[in-house]
Image (cartoon, rainbow, N blue to C red; front, side, top):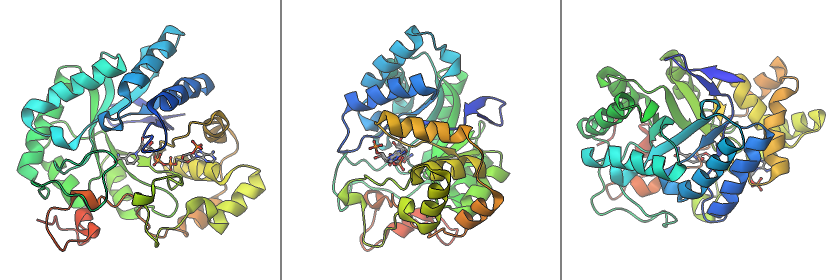
Length: 326
Ligand SMILES: NC(=O)c1ccc[n+]([C@@H]2O[C@H](COP(=O)([O-])OP(=O)(O)OC[C@H]3O[C@@H](n4cnc5c(N)ncnc54)[C@H](OP(=O)(O)O)[C@@H]3O)[C@@H](O)[C@H]2O)c1
């Protein structure tokens, strides 16, 4: 199944996530990429900060040598936060391309709208000394270089991630090439209905990360208030009726709602089930209505490390009043 982006390009309706965090090695992720291609995946969500693009590149080479044409694949990568400077954007993209053994990316994202560096695996209390709020003029300097990547043929599309409506409004006002996709956290307990509707109304395809509620994320990314999507009685009941794992219900819901989920799994039975779930009968309208009603507004990836002032809460990163915090 495909989604069609505003420039007309088809994007596969499900992708494989590739962020192993603390617990999954680069080789295990690369193995999953290769196995997922065998069961039918054509879309892979990569990022330089995941620290595994070189291993994934070797897997992609094998996939293409095995007969899958490059044009059938949809490969995403992302600019990390310490590379927002104008001189860093194009070299960062070229480094990801070299690691992934590709001539072009299907989409290159700005991973976060903040240029605040933090090392992979750091504690949520960690802050970069020069941390800044979102400064639109600076973001646009980065975005001009992102646009140049399209002109150079290094990226077919450019995308935003972890944005809010007020930030996207400014970006759409000032961009020469608007984002074709917006990667955002989306799962049954965090449906972001307002942002989801907004991006779709503006012709931007939402890509949903943590589509299963990231059940195996590290302890530092958990709080006592977090809820568990795959244990929700509605999800569990529908899964029981269909004879599938609750994860599969989350994926079917995501695709039927209109977002592009990018679940991670390194287990063949799991990523195959997630993919094949899309080939069976769709969820009923009643299922879709019941899942719409279990939203808990439960953001899992809160982004605390990006805060730039003392006494802030993570909510400040997400412009809850519709105004960009400075
Ligand atoms: N743009 C951003 O800032 C951003 C932020 C976070 C994540 N992402 C992207 O989104 C991707 C997905 O997010 P995520 O990995 O945090 O969370 P997720 O996809 O919601 O959950 C992944 C977990 O679910 C388990 N799982 C998958 N399918 C299953 C099944 N059928 N049955 C049982 N368990 C299953 C996997 O374990 P097993 O391996 O054991 O199956 C894995 O640990 C990431 O890999 C990354 O590419 C982007």
